[in-house]
Image (cartoon, rainbow, N blue to C red; front, side, top):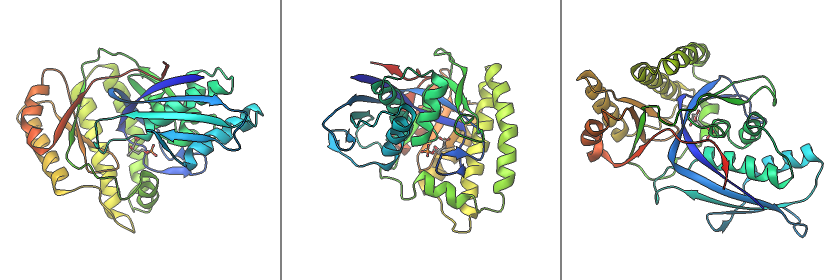
Length: 314
Ligand code: PMV
């Protein structure tokens, strides 16, 4: 049996659109930071008696098309037609609305490929994780990583930018809304691609990737935060201007963003980023963390995260 653990990651430059939904090829590259608190542990083992894969998630037998896609890919790759028993546990705070497919598919890529006897490098693992969930390609790596858009399965991989577990960055989750999202990320990005500014968002994103890489290389937290905030807010603006417009924000989301901007304008390093849901994450550093928490704790439950490690065997 092989068992792997992977952590969630937050996108600083977002993936928000597919050029090929079947292979999960993105319209743009993206940059993420793997975090250190929320993780998935997954074990996988070939079982000769199975007629199909057996997938248990948090103790419940689950049918998951994305898991099947990853397993079928591995069977095609190895020529081994066996089925696999997979046990997966998400270690997230109770009902936090934070369950992430990123940690799940990064852990599955490692555990399941090993169950088939493969010993893949991280780049290859990132392509397999990507088949389940695009953002999972980045959770294969610790610290900062970039997922290159590519044009086919092999060229759409992630790689490490910098894996410094001591980089002074904090990501503060403010968990205000614990309900599950109404529009999945796949649905959301498909709708967003009809926004009139979608092409402009993509080309801007490429420039922001270059600026973000420079900011990370210079350990410039203020630049990292400013670029990440701009990129995230523009992503959500696409949703509001799509032909079938929608919005993940709630009043609480808007209030937290406003409070974060106020903090920044009064000299605290604090920058908002938001994924496919209403919860805001604030990027800051160790020095500014307590001011941020003091100001935002009334809006929801606080979770502080640092840079975390890449996928490993456990
Ligand atoms: O990996 P998915 O399909 O869950 O999509 C992730 C989308 C965002 O979280 C909004 C952005 C990102 O790059 O992680």
